[in-house]
Length: 148
View 1 (spheres, rainbow, N blue to C red):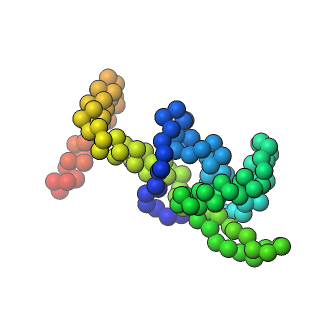
View 2 (cartoon, rainbow, N blue to C red):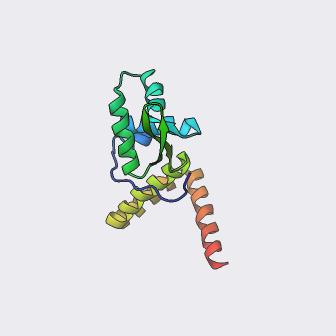
View 3 (cartoon, one colour):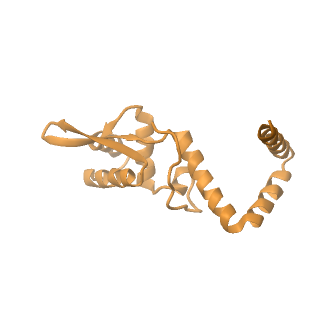
């Protein structure tokens, strides 16, 4: 799986976890892909998802293609029974995707509302003594790294 930055095109302020960045079906599919630890066909993903909810094969196929177009899945063509088929795998490990997505959202907020974001983060973290100490330690470590 590739390391690097995932491109996030939306942020749903009411979404929880991955659904803040992806739709519900996209989230289900990417979670199946991460749990598989191997490339999967649309049929493989469809079979896993249909155990949990009623869903059409073509809906899974279209959504996986959309995730490919967004750069979150990669694919190759293989010959299978009945013709050619796509085999997909995630371009990003789960942690790297989440980290990249959060960075993109925060970068956008800082670029658009810098002082407000900075003040909010200081207020939020300084209200919790342990979080404040952890942040202070991280900032000091980062500053030492830049000097050294």
